[in-house]
Length: 550
Image 1 (cartoon, rainbow, N blue to C red):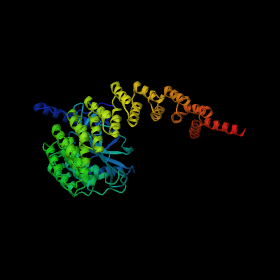
Image 2 (image 1 turned 45 degrees about the vertical axis):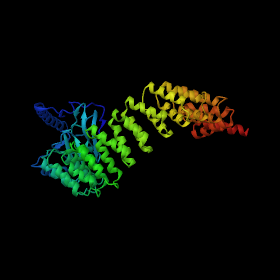
Image 3 (image 1 turned 60 degrees about the vertical axis):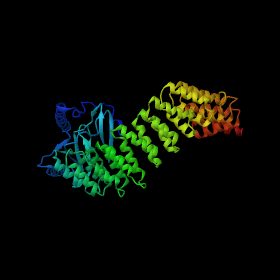
Image 4 (image 1 turned 90 degrees about the horizontal axis):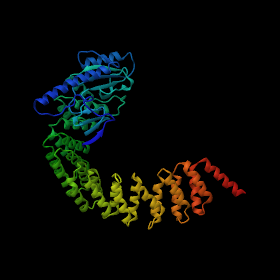
């Protein structure tokens, strides 16, 4: 799903991604591409040079010769060691970029996350990647494989790194294919199958026409589900294999997870026929198809660049699909579109679909759309929804909306509401809001204004008990000492006091235990003091025992 993410505290800019590409027509595009390629080469050289103090250069006629040379040189060290080399990286992808806000999609394979998208309007790319393979001392088998961004400083687990330079695509792909198809060494520190999965990921990151055929071979012949899933993802990124992926989705003998992944890959492929293919696949699913596959197609459609066509399909599923889970997934996807245009349709679904899960999904979709009109619809359901559960859920979502205007609307709703269940939910919301108006209302209810039930007073006192500050402690103390307060309300106040820091609560509780006229309240205070373990409480109990003996 396409989202916004934050890499870190730094903003991504040309200084970090000098090789980022931006589409322009004609000669401008060619010039930009040439500039980016030059910048990438310069950056790669600078990145390697910056780490040359820790990398040990290795010479050899080809990749295999360099790997053998690294093995020979490592024997004297008697420690695990890395062999590392750079390669031609597929454009438009980023692995472990340097920081900033990111808009797009991400996919995690065995702990390595790949980003596809933009930052500040520019494609995020990390062209300075390298394959790192770890071997134990005096061992030929690879126990770990990682793809690292050379622009990022690393300790490499404290092991020496033998730098093999830049590998040719053919020798690199052949080497990685062998690792992807191998049986992991027993000493592997990456977990079963992770070495194979990382090797498959590394193949997908190569900028080479042979990659798609290699990955399709893994899908057809590998028995490793992680390898197959990773291969399917990258086939989608490469593009041009919609029919191959569609055949996986249709195959009811295939694992549900791989079928879901294939649907996602079609959606990520940017193929012009992707949307119509996904719609056709959905319509052709059998009644026995499990929800995971259907949800995969729904999510893939929601990511399609044809926003109007995607919305139309999602609305059709949300309104007419017999499977409630699919209807819910479609409604959720509509919320991620963030479009005011679907609000009326969502309200129609809320009114017509009696399934609670679907109706909750509508509320969440409106919350995700997060426009004034969408917020107004949530408030409308909070006021007039035909079930207490939906009204409470709408009120819960309104707690996230900042501003005194919304506080004012909720205060008016509290004052006119007849249901204590709904009023309790509103008290929860008031406690979560950073608003003087909301806090004042909590204190008003806790003090027992006109028409306030003992139950609501207890609830407000419970909410106030979690708030720091002198005002809340004074209110709790006032409630305990009030001669007109109901016993249950006073006992709730005692409990709320006991939840506060010992420095505040213990002296007040000891006073209540000693002097309160109501025996039930005194007992409650004594009980919570006993649970506190505070030395002052222990001394108080000793005094009680001495007085009883006397």
